[in-house]
Image (cartoon, rainbow, N blue to C red; front, side):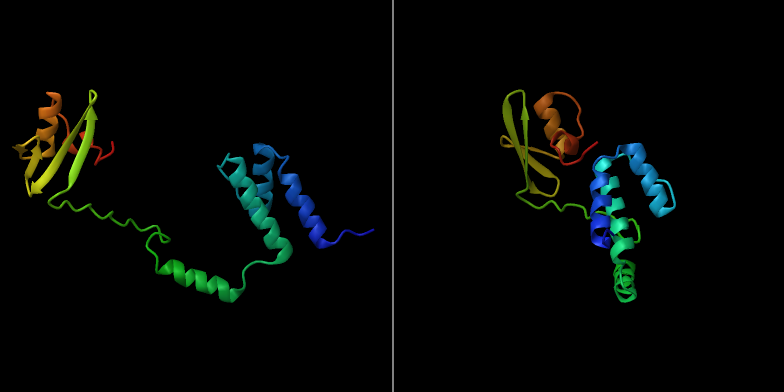
Length: 148
């Protein structure tokens, strides 16, 4: 009794669940024609499953492929162009909150270059952080505005 195409595909997809990383990498090489550096089992299974379905059920139509290419051409991220991140704008009333040694401190930006902490004005977040800790800190880092 001959197996139909859909049953054959289902069996191949089911077999992926039992494969370990080296077997999945070998299957990836067989289907895509180049090696993968991925060791993530779920990622490998999904990419292989997509390729198997593409072979058995057909890939994108030429029209759909052209549409996606045009869409990607107009997207800087798809073309891997570095897009500068928008800088967060600080406006009067912006609050910076930080817990330090069991106490919560709140610094409020009153106007450009004037930060208020407990009724005292400072010229920068760093100066306010120094008032809180007694040591020199990058103010943005201290208040979690900037990551290392």
